[in-house]
Length: 402
Image (cartoon, rainbow, N blue to C red; front, top):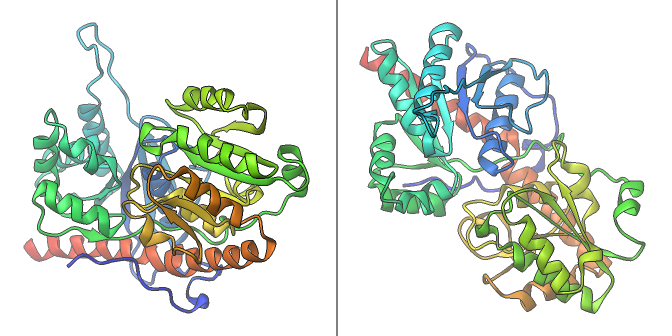
């Protein structure tokens, strides 16, 4: 049976404290990810940082440094995938280059486990790398993040290779029970373990900066914020439509954090609805907590969400969330306590929910409950040990076979 997120315990279990060092020998883990702003890259980077803080050695592998990777985190090292160039290669064979880099890191850095985030194309490359270093053991763990299952899992051009790769992995995890169920159905997997996304309560906390807020909004404005990779699945035009409905009722501004293919559509929609002067596009930022903390409402009207890491980070910064009741979002957001959930496309319903948060008492209560939920149910101190236990489990299984 798939495991869900652990139930909230006492606040002390996940309160910001010095992170414990493991009494057992350090783990040596390679974390493979896309370096972009999406949740898979964020989780991989934050997990590398947490493993390093806890005394293990983490090697981040990608074609460029991930956005959230700080310059010199303790015990964390970056390895860039070298892409070949040849006149016959219209598209660089990234899977082969990545497999080669994983082999290099395994052989020369003592990596025992390669943990890939987002299955495409990473699972195929990692399984190939494990075969290349055999008989030396290299355990492969894959974490599914969403569209690698819900969209690419149905793509006939790659789905057979993807399913084969996942069955060859030593362990498969998903960031929500909803996504785990979809993966089992699409790929015929016997077991998909649920380990949710997490936040670091120390760095992801409210950062009150009146000057920053004043630079983005006028006194009395209701500040809505959306953060994503601006893909179509995020329903970016709906973000602007909801905001326009809110702005008709009261003074408000919309902050758009991130970048991606739907940015131009958002600009057009803002102009068409007459709110362009109140929509601010902020681009991508490494340190998002101060910008999240400016907002009164985090808006996420997605078509589907496997988990909603951006929403969780907003909650950790005491920002209630108005989102759609799809995918893993109901596993994260408590409707009526930490935010509101509406059907996809319910513009008026989401706008009404945002306007309810203009009431100071309502906002204060929900903001506090949002932070509490984020820290106690999804704090790093609660979730990261589950990954460490999984790594040791697959290593122990290999030792038992030896």
